[in-house]
Structures are given as structure tokens and as C-alpha cells.
Length: 371
Image 1 (cartoon, one colour):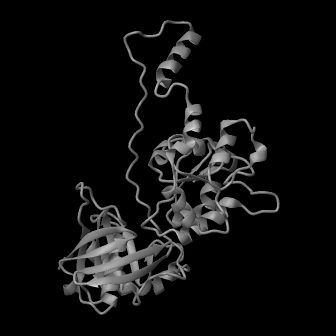
Image 2 (cartoon, rainbow, N blue to C red):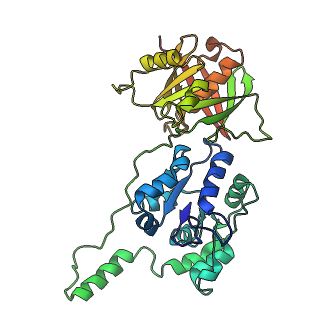
Image 3 (cartoon, one colour):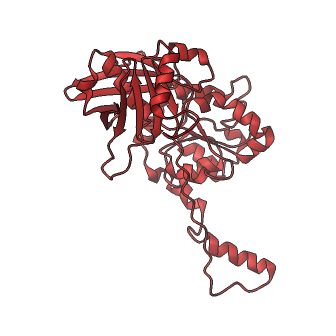
């Protein structure tokens, strides 16, 4: 999501007599988009941060951040996020225009045509890009924008972005040296630093998560898991055998821990504050008598779980076809195992592994007793 600074931007006050757009949009995204199939990030214009202050911005977006939204720094990281995006939900911001220029699907959540010069390139974007319909399903509209996108749709916009693609370093250096009035170095090429690879930062959801599960196969064990970061939301047409609630131990509402089926903690295995996993899982189950399973996520592709019966189990996903670690949230594996056991199946029947399906992705997860 990309927003510029103005009353009628995506982060603004909306049209007269209307409602604030982004505060309305973010809960809808959390409710409608399955947590393991979508990743939401927000890029806000620096003037929004400057005008309201970082503290107020983070406070306004706190609920969304606890539901998994990543808030990008106003100065660093937005270009990497733009490159990575499968779809940009934006307004008349430069970032939204850049997205269209590099061939990324764009969906306009706000676009005040009256505020723009009709002959400007950004106004042309408003005439070319599809609009978000507040009354329609957000997921359906986002998926349609990605599925039906034709990069050639914005070819004319891309042509207006730069008259000399890839030559900005040389052109700018030449200009600066001419302004200073000294000769440009002839033996040193004008180069730009490459964009740094961002730190690995998975979405960590501290809001309660509603988990819908369905047993697809008993031999081999295969469980479909769909998680929503709005614990009160359950789609009317959900194809599920059972549902449960998973809660992060650091949830803002500690009362939810008393009714959680699965309690989750994210930390290194040797973190002296909470670890080791075997100790923490035992303490959680002793403290919360209604909890059926405690999950200690100690890696991007693994977690240790303890069942109410006292079994300590390591769940580890196999690498993908390229040998890279599976990057699904391991808490989804824990929920799959909870659904398996809750359906009357045994831990021995889950060994040596289960398949966890999130959306259209199959995660092969090894199941191994730890003691």
C-alpha cells in the first residue's frame, strides 16, 4: 500500500462526508486476506511522518501492525518493497506511479482527479489503472488485478518516467560538476550503490489468529490450514472441518491466552530469557490449563511444540525445490498438528511427517520426537 500526503490520499480524510480510507481498509485486509498467502506492507510519504510524527503514525497503525502489517521506513526500504510487490494498492503518489512504470499491477484505492493537472502523467495513471470498489471483496479485486494484468497497459507511463533509463548517475554527476565549475573525473565511472538486500523480517502477528483447518488425507497425513489475523472473522463459505484460536504470548489482551487452543512464542532456541523450548512449552501448558499445544518458533522453517499429553515434538519443513528454507510461518505447522491430534489421530500416525497446505502451496513438514 502506498500513500502520498493530502486530505484525499489513501492515508487521508477521504472525500467530504466520507470516511478515513486507510483505517477502514486495514481491518478489511486483515479479515479477508489469509495470513499465509498474503504479505501487506505500507509505504507512507515522508511528509506524513513529518506532519504527524512517528509516534502517532505507529499508534494509528498499531492494530494493523499487530495483525502482521509491515510499516516501511519513509527513507529506506520502500524501493525494495516496490520491487518485491505483486500488487500495489495506492493513490496519486509517486510510488504508485513508479509501480505502474516497472510493470507492477496497480489498484487505486483513492484518486482525487480534481486535484491533478489532467495533462500530467499521474492523471494518466488514474485513467489507466483499475479502481478499488469499497463494497466488493478486497481479496477478489486484488487477485483479479494480478491475474488480468498486462504490463503493456502502462508502457506509455513507463516511457515518461525517464528519458535516459540507467544513465542517471552519469548525467547527474556531469551536471553537478558543471555547476561547481570543475572538470569531471575522466578515469572514474559514475556509479550508484546497489540497493542493499533488506534484513530478513518475517511478519510476526501478536493479534489472536483464527485458524480454519481441514483434513485432506489421513495416509499420508495432509492438513489444509487457513489463518486470519482477525480472530472474530470466519468466512461464511469457508471449507473447513474445524477451527481454533492461536495466540501469541505477547498479545495485548492477556485474557485471550486463557481461551487459546495454541499459544505461540518466537525466539532463538538459546534465548536465555524464555528458552530452551522444552522448558518454555512446559511452563505455558502448566500456566494455561485450557491450552492444547504450545509452539516455540526458533527458526524460519521450524518450531518445537509440546502437546497437552506432554510430548515434545520438533516440526521442520523441508526445503523448496531450490534448496531454500520453507518460509511459511512455522506456527501454521503447529496448528496443522493440533488439528490432526484434535481429530482423533495420534502423534505416531503423524510421523515421520505431514503435509501442510496453505493456499496452493504444499509444505512437507518432518515430525520428530525430541524426548
